[in-house]
Image (cartoon, rainbow, N blue to C red; front, side, top):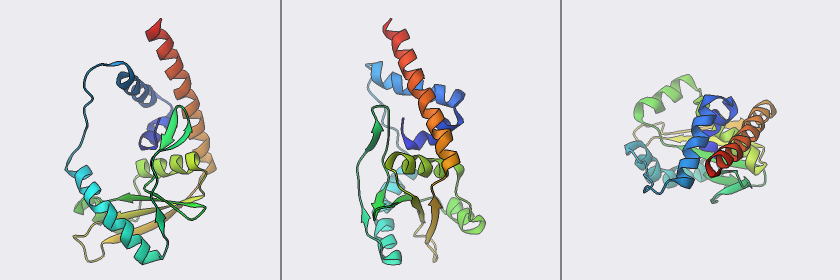
Length: 176
């Protein structure tokens, strides 16, 4: 279970069950795995390095890139980087419309907030700098610090526990 699905995990309902079934399809199906990509994902991949460099220039904080961080055999995350001993960075490169909306409303999407909370839970970090970058604007860079939230951690823990139980249950049912 990964942080990109943290909102479904924390909700601990039908979305969690659907997500667990999708993960088990990956495990058991012999069909070739579809690698999903769209123009927004490709844009993010192209611009993420620029955003990371701009973050360093803007804040003076060096970002250490990391791979997959595991909490246990069922749980992990891939943060966009670690900062010092306590921080993380999560970089998004939204469309023009979504970037302008963020600049005006100053409100991070709840799915991103949950993603960052789960990343902090998995890595033991205390804060995560949310970075949005869109080079099509004069004001092209947005940073907002998100602190660890124990109440959200509790919901994530509950969802992960339920997810682990579902995985075990569904494996047992499938394998007979």
